[in-house]
Length: 168
Image (tube, rainbow, N blue to C red):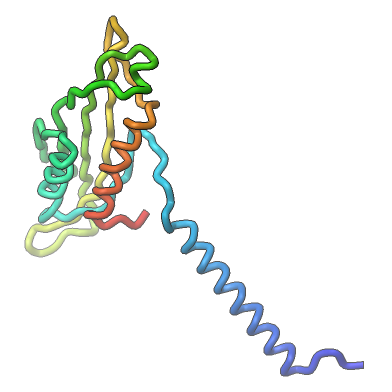
């Protein structure tokens, strides 16, 4: 007794291949859409060009009340460092007894060696590091566990990623 004809087997194989490819591509797409950023004190923020690296960073930081203290250009990297942003403690920080808080942001743009162009332009792989200190009554200590603080930093990271080329 013949259950499957040659045409049915070919059709079935094509159907299986189609379903496999479709489910793989959709699952890959779904994993990367609306992916919530988890807080850490270091973030990859995307790729910028020499044309927009300093301008975009300056604008984004100023929009979030961070002021640039200095720029530094090295042979393979550029750095942007903010002044300390002195702020009132968030309620969660106050509940832990932290009376004062200050935050500093460091941006590092590492030159991508394969991105040099004839007119001296190149691309930067950009990273952001955050240092948050709170005053415990005696000294400033590192503390970045407050949800309001984390949300503030994640907002800046998202803004950078929207303005840069972010493919990670």
